Length: 392
Ligand code: SF4
Image (cartoon, rainbow, N blue to C red; front, side, top):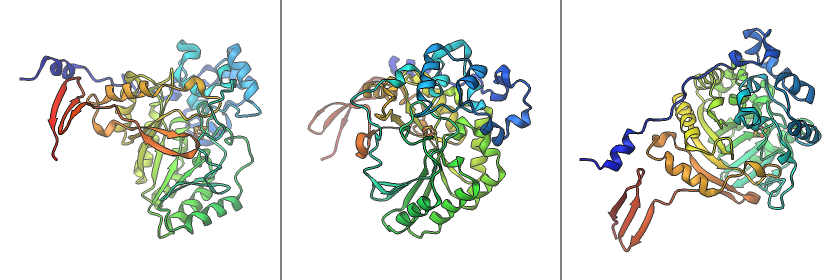
């Protein structure tokens, strides 16, 4: 006979997505005349990104605070939003829409905080070449491009992304030379910026060079485009490149269930068809996804689409992101709530990437509530206290 507490916990209904929409069906009035074929074109989506006050006003409207922030950020970390992502805004939620908040700057982004950093992960301190970083013995990151489909307002690399000219071929070659010359490096992340914004030939050259290196076991591509511009994955040549060098590990970034669209599901399916191994890295963002009822359906959907929730990051200490920061305790409370409600396959590691490049640390809800010698008491997923006798 199970306890009443356990029975109540077992009876709680899962939180699932009611429906998954297509961004095309949701497109704002300004794009009503666009055909489905144009909408599904990567080139059209890229060329029609919203990057100016006028374009934003025409497509999604700006309030006074947003307009001031867009203008003030133009020469620093500007604004760029694909039509696909803009179509996911919920007008009824106004400036509180969790999709809008990730894409359009607000005045709080202009505030300077002494405890925030321009280079929160200490990547300049750990650079082994102008475009390569090594923070762990067996891993390296190649910063392959300054471009992205979208300028995410919580971006860690906002002091570099979108600001400079494209990364030169010489810098990329230098990064490859440093990484392939070090036999301790076994796992390489191609990142940026978003590496899927590279020309297919450049991406193939990078992947092929790394795959040809005998000591590199793992090549990872970190991209947010599966959420922000999934039409990129309808490029058959890109999928062929990824298939040719399979398995490639692809790290996506979905932060909210509103990003779960038909287009994104198709993009994930295309990546799976190329033999990619998919993992998602969400960022815990205040007022956007800092609640179990938001993350649970997102993680369920990702798992269903073959993309395992891998990391949930505490927001990095990047200058301009103070308003997105949550406390560690609120993240721990979310993780405790998800445990038992979701399969372990759908529960990411909750981690903090320590400032100044000091590495990731797992943050786990403390399940041991007391300990007396070999006798421990645990708090389990439905809140019961359970005794356990450890071995010597
Ligand atoms: S896609 Fe990644 S690198 Fe680009 S702006 Fe967003 S978080 Fe930053």
